[in-house]
Length: 399
Image (cartoon, rainbow, N blue to C red):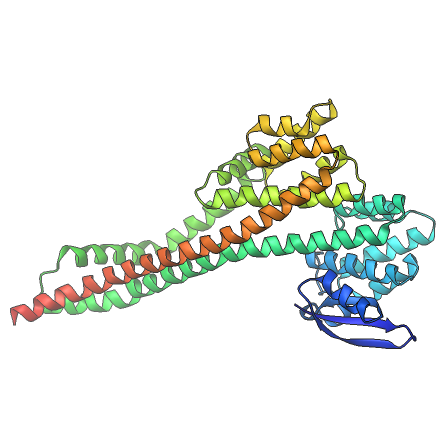
């Protein structure tokens, strides 16, 4: 990836430029090896020196840039209040700018950074607040911010992998349906008139195509209205907790896609737990925060059960194995981690495994769906061509 950086050399000279690196941390290490103290580093497409997008909401990318710039400038020895003012001046995100103004004032007034962030939970999730509080308590704020930035980048990467695996087939399917619908609605009626004028005997496949054509033309508006009503109704119904939970459980049972969602939930849990436990956050607090990041209400409910059992003294591995939702491998590895007293390392190993597994799964999913969709498109086009050519062939035979 291409990064834009601003750094200061040992002799005090300010340097700006671009650097290619596979990750943010690798870019920082390469710049440090040149004897540079990095004060700002962002992906080239994110805007000049980390200016965030003008937006009402604060996205994952916005938070990633915030924690990244925070760690870089604190590592350079700049006081926290000044760092917050600098980031506030740089961002174009109105919500983040307003929040940072309040946070800066609170920090200047003696409030701890973590407590100041906790007043803005609509912008900063519990994960960020807990890690920053832990970093303040341990005196390793820069170190935990670097870990947090790394995790947020991994989260964004995971989201991108899953979206790319699902988005491309969806767009291709919509395109296929749109092309077939245009042919059926606009082209076939013209051909029907020709067939009627010459009085050719229409084969079954052509009559079937004409029935579909008339149905879509006569009821197309009602179908769109019905689809809109159904969509809105589903959205409203899914706001009810019980139905939303049932829907998330159903999604996990879907062939192929359900398995991918299960892997994603375990990957998010493992990555978050690694970051929190390494930062010194207690296990129970880690489980509570992880509930909000797994991305599935059914897994969230299961984690709540695991946390309650752990609070009562039960083993994590035993409780997770009893739930039969998480993979057996996770329970087995956690049993080893609990015995060795190094759960953070165990979760880290699980996170790496599922990161590779998800990457392979998304590749395989795309490789599987693409030929299936092309086969579907070919079948639809073959059906239309056959329905058009057979009457013409019969007409030629009668001449």
